[in-house]
Length: 156
Image (cartoon, rainbow, N blue to C red; front, side, top):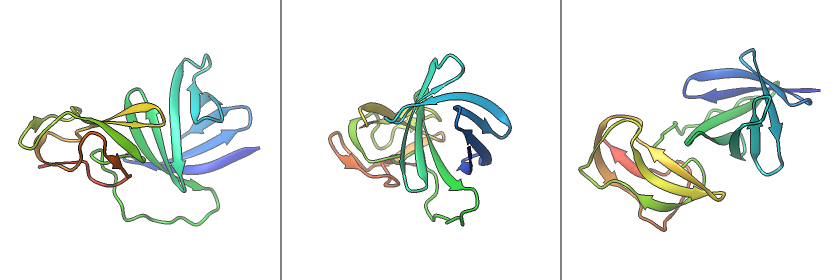
């Protein structure tokens, strides 16, 4: 049996088919996977690359190679719901606790700089600048519990 879905990320829509044997086709590219019940996915024939997945409703957050990817999943044949919220690398991808704030207002940052370190599901999640700019405001502090979509740092 196979499960067909459409995944939407910042690069657009991707056709995904997941087979019972662990194979996954993403835009016709085959990827071997092994999925545990704890949200851990091992990628590749040897399972050497590990990703962690958390989800709520149609949203999934994938932590891979130090980055968090936000995906919207649509099951084939089901009506799609559009969300008003846009993708922002400057907000929490899932409920998390702020461990450290690495910047302060007025700081110059470059795309990819780590701004905030969060902890969720026993993992550290770096929130990185998605553009070059100046930190206009910091909306969190160490110890804060933050929710998805709520701004953590604003860059101008």
